[in-house]
Image (cartoon, rainbow, N blue to C red):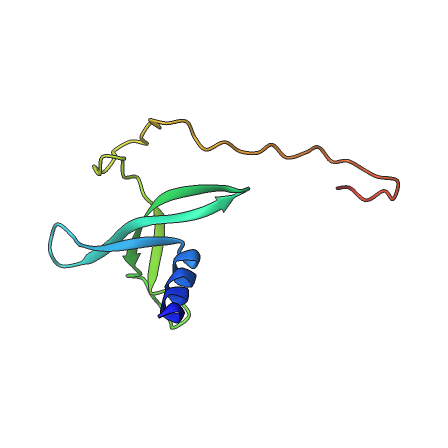
Length: 107
């Protein structure tokens, strides 16, 4: 049982997002919506995404699906214009100015 728990914990630690399949309004196609979590300088940032099948796939090397950043607002409605943030954007850690040591290599 411990081995199963360890595997589940490993998968959970490696998780970077989730997608949900949805039907288009015309009922003829489907797409996925969800989120991906990225680590930006130690800050976890959750970004909403939308994924469509690649309708212009021209060869085997072309991707089957294409993922875009979503224009979806927090309340779940599709935005017609970029939504204004209701919360402050994630803090970014300022990059230190280039410092040279005695060896002349910038840090």
